[in-house]
Image (cartoon, rainbow, N blue to C red; front, side, top):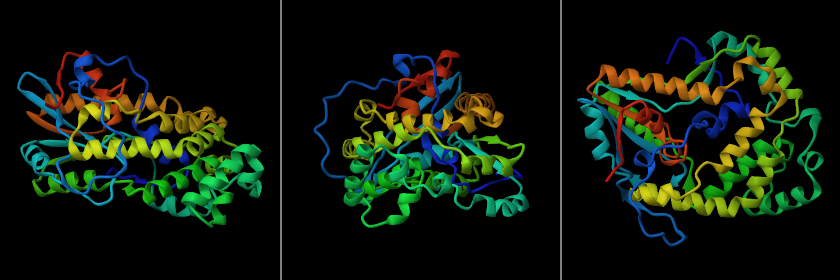
Length: 342
């Protein structure tokens, strides 16, 4: 990482995976994102267990220079063990590993310490309000049902902003269905790179706030446009968990065609919009056009590595590969050859 450290804020625009990983783009050419057709899978009612191969890799090339692209997915089955042997061979023969795109808000270690008191209570509703005070009665009634089902008796969550309460509900639902938000796969690949002395390249977009203390104080007092995110989560949680379970099983078994048929980003996009449409985000210059800047930052790193190395290994979220606006479509549009896994 750089000389700046990432400040561990509870701001949702630093935590939401959609904001960190997706962006609008032209429609992807079919060759880049459409795997071979397969029969529609039966609804997944259980999560897979044991040692699993995971997905294959995409090949991006120009001349004799190649970049192998591996799709990350979360959540994954709690009792699954990933067989990393194929990835290990590709990483070992590469000169560089590109870590996933996203963004961080950086500040010096000392400044981060002095900011800690300002961070207290960031995830709470302004003015001590509870969820019952900020939600429509019918939405709150549905929340209570889903909270009892997945979270149980936790009154502390009632003081959370809706977007944070929604995240807690989602994570609790995943856990009860044998799924876990997973960082082990990317961590395993990073470890493999280090063991083989392969260069690790950070592709996160670094953002500096001109006046972080004032920004945090403003956030604590501002309302967010997060009702749609909360409502979408509560009303569709059981369906979303089914989709995520199917995606987790498909990832574990390397079934790219099944993953491509799933909507992997719709809920995340709704919640990311809650952040991007907030008055604070619209008036803070550092957060303007974040999605586009994240994508451009990754593209710059990818093109440089393809030019410099004969072999590169890159990590992307699966939804940024097989989705309708995949990152690889940009490379294909620039003349790189893109091949999907067999």
